[in-house]
Amino acid sequence: MFLFSEMGKKKDFKAEYRIIRESPFEVLALCDMAIPKKTCTFLEDEKYIPFLKDNISMVITTGQIAAKLELKQEGIIVTEHPRILFFQIHNFLADDEKYKRKENKNFISNKANISEMAWIAGHDVRIEENVLIEPFVTIYPHVHIGKNTVIRSGARIGGEGFEFKRFAEKIIPVKHLGGVEIGSDVEIQNNSCIDKAVYPWDNTVIGDDTKVDNLVYIAHGVKVEPNVLIAGNSGIGGRTVIGRDTWIGLGSEVRNGLNIGKSARINMGAVVTKPVMDGQSVSGNFAVEHHEFLKFMKKQR
Image (cartoon, rainbow, N blue to C red; front, side, top):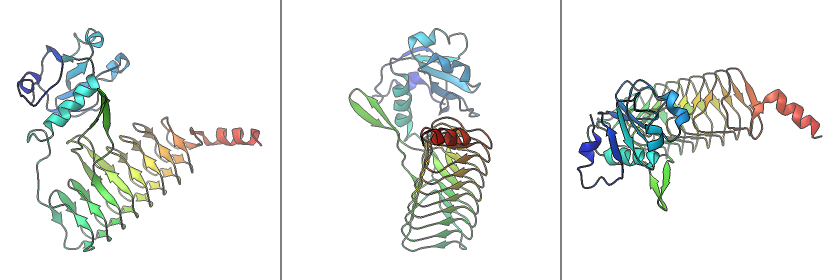
């Protein structure tokens, strides 16, 4: 458990905040993440108050929002920049044994076929039987690769993701402490990149039997369910969930934090900025229902 009052006593923790009411927390997470542990989160907009889960024991927020929370939350911290303080705490705790993941020895099946020209981290990598890893693949710590999976040349799995915060004329990098979980019978093709999750309790997930084409970028914390096809030059923003049996067409871009339904279709070149329902097909920039897109295009001719 962590307490703000204890962190504040440490010389290397420098931040401006005021404790309204204190409660211990175990992990950090966004307000809509239902983690089965006491959680510290942040709020910068009162419209997210209804999204607070029962696991939230500590909220970092502004004075204005705090007044509306005092009867609802165990712990409240007030600061001018809640999001910045939240990630300052995350970075500060990154080397704390109680916060980060414990280090474990590698497990690599003797039935895996791994090129001598691949690079695999010295700890926290688990590779199951019948996995094929081609030359020039990079596997970072906290990666699990399931049975019968293929990782083609140049792919990078479990690297640091793109999460930066602007503050006081500086750009603050956010440390990535999570992992990557790749299922069985998956194929990750040439020069694709799958980043690890931000939080130590979280993984970027690629479900069983999913196939990822060349030059695909999958950001931190994405959850791809089984039997998904992702065509080349596509990008999936952080924390997005893609339902099973979905098709992501060539050169598509999917914004962060979205839910893409089961058996959905993101057509070639789509720029998706809103959730997609089960079975829905979308096209265009910004993407809309496919038949509406076709009607619009016919009017232009």
